[in-house]
Length: 224
Image 1 (cartoon, rainbow, N blue to C red):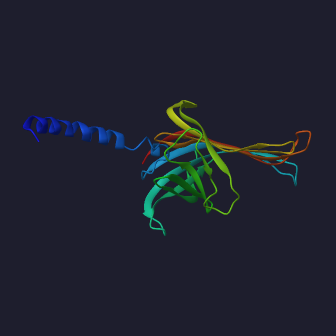
Image 2 (image 1 turned 180 degrees about the vertical axis):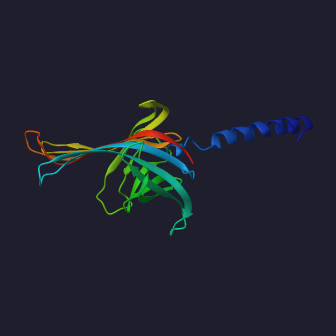
Image 3 (image 1 turned 135 degrees about the horizontal axis):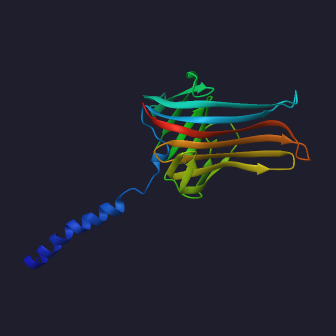
């Protein structure tokens, strides 16, 4: 090869490699919507309405829940998992009391959360608008299609403002005698900031016979 041609070829090599590295960089995965750092915590206010078909009573509850990533450990499957310690209190003046312990995992393609020994797929990566999956793929419950309905949206929760959130619609089904609705919103760097769960049985005229209607709304978050 002539010297001038060789020099020209070598001058292109850095540019070629630069293009390869840019094109080969992974797309935005969205892992930040499901934090996995030890000490990360979120406090929620919980509003709950329970309709008792046996007594006919309607009970309203308000309390606060604090969820803390207490530690990171290797589970029985050899995968890194998060120990989630959850605390409860009635209001700001009360001390926190341990409520239960859950588990979570952030894997390359999904985020799992084990609640009361039932594992749900909360998010899939990379996060994409209209992405859908079976949230019950790793438990014994029937198939339930989750879907991302909003992505990278602003969200306001009281005095807290979040620049980027993802909304996961888990269930939206209503008939003359029933209502089932589940939705969760995740904020980047925080995790879940809102949850709505409605599971009601009704009379044909719309009267609620039994069921539950509750929500989780973020109050504060940080790192210990």
